Length: 599
Image (cartoon, rainbow, N blue to C red):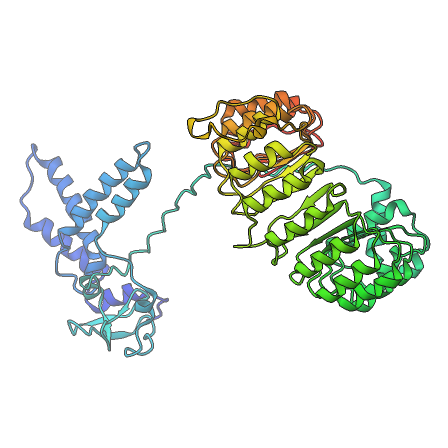
């Protein structure tokens, strides 16, 4: 304090010490008194005495400024702090050891102080304690009832009301000076299989840029003028990607001279737009419409007169067309050669009978995902003996499978003339159909699809292809009386084979397929053949030189070396699907102009 009684600002701790009678003058007087009471040190212990006095004074000074002494400076600091200091030193030494840094840091935090960090609620106080008093004011401890100075570390009593001094706060199990321990950062686990995305960026051609611009301004169809017929199909695909085809802009693809029309997404076309389609394209002989869910009976009936030359129709999703409309359509188009529909739940047996009676020269039939499919359909199909070349009866739905007996009778009647057969999804078809239906009666097949047939076995498929290539396997004793016609069947090598999702098929079936059709195979799908060996897959690359598309998804033995062999030896391959092949790595080889999906 100056002679003019003017003093500067002081901290709360200095103010508290001054009110408790602890000042710099008091400390100096106490030190002088202790020095006078001690005897003079001899020459032998003089240095030790001075050293001891200095250590004692330093310890005493540190004790006076210890956090526990803020409220009661006369009591000595607890011994627990010394133990903690020792643990602190051990923790620092241990933290330097290599490879144990995280664990040692955790143990150091535990040894340093057993108290846990306080929550924010204790800093602010609970509802019963009210607002926290200003820093520097005096409060009475709710526990020991001693007066203390409020600091920013003062904590509310729990349960309230009131506030705790520093000593009582520590005794309650929370250190007001302890900072919350920083959460340990866990190392992110590395992925067992790194997924690498490959993207080949090329400069777009001038034609593709023009098509993109036309697609962007497709609604201004009248301002586009005449677009070449060569690019109309590309424009149709581009518009279908974002479902932008409308009754207004679809007229860009109409022409009275059109004989073929393919639209890939006509979801937004109304029944009136389908009726106008027939009127504006009267010379169509082939019509292909995808996602035509709004096509109804009125449009089909309008086509009876507006499309008199129609010979082939392919529709995806004609849900609303009723049986009566199908019958009238067949009656007005007896020249129909191809009828391909997918997802038509109202197509029944009477529609099938009308199709057979009116369109006697049909060569291509697809009834895919038709829920009313049954064995009775096959009795009508056999009436196309001599004309039908391509037949697709796949995926009838759960519990709607054809039987072995009906399929065998159908093959006996028209099997020799079929070039394409798809019976995928008929869960009741077994090896009996392979032995008694396909083996002796199929003689012209170039494309075969038998996917998702759970009762088909590895031995049955191997038997089929062995007999087709002229190798008669040894007959088991229980089949000695087997029909001799089984071994007489022969079939040329296939160009397309889909036997995916048949979990029982393995190495024996794969080897037989390769021995029979490897020279001509262009499209092969063995997705789900989980047990086929790596050696067999390696032979595929060396034998199937004409391969264009390949699906080996979920084949467990596919690895980087198998893919490399395929890329090196199959020069014409364009698409490879490897979904579910967990032995592939980020180092899987790539090849320009070859799309590998599933890595």
